Image (cartoon, rainbow, N blue to C red; front, side, top):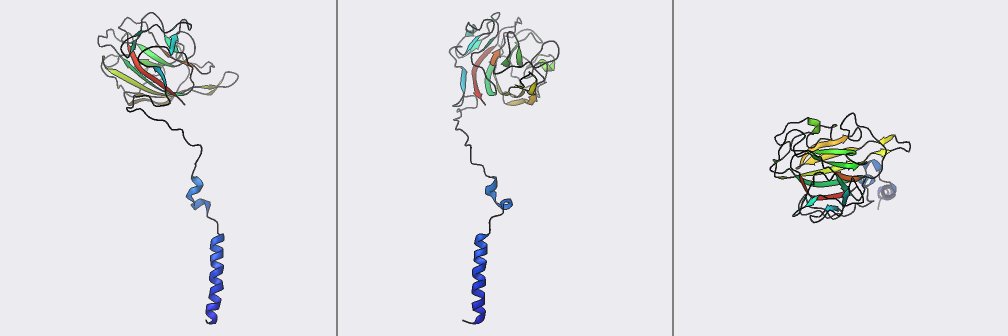
Length: 260
């Protein structure tokens, strides 16, 4: 072994030690951006998109309205008519709402305009789903339901509108006699202690798989006359409307909700 070999060996050993001591550069280490917790819960989806997933709360099971009560008299059960797997508005009995109150949620709801529908404008299969019922009657935040397959009305009052606030992005209505479905994401408003709005409500809505509202930020609760406004509230029921127009009553089925 010559003197050059003796000089090379210590130099090589020193290089190995320096390589071992060198720490990885966080900017070039993919592990620095990996998040492992919290682990999302496991939810088993339904076989079809309209089927309730494993964590859903069933609001109508096709047999009874035990999850609902009368808005006129909360001590009384919902008086609407139950048929084979669906229920129909019983005109004159008033709105119904869920016993359970919700904040943020995902809602699936199916409805049908009767094939023999009559009337025009707002008097043609009119109903609505209130995403948060904030009092009696029609108090709350309404998504309109109406026959607009071949029926002209004001566009911020047609099916899929946030009533009197947001025009739907499309008209995806089926003809009367066919079942239609809403899939809705509701983010309830938040309020400060003094009643002022901390965070306004927002809604995303699909009708028959077509996007009609894309994260629309509400200006307040629904007002038939005048501008919408907020009034402080907490978790609220989901409400269905007995509109009172003279056209044949609409029907509902397969209603479920996932709390978010």
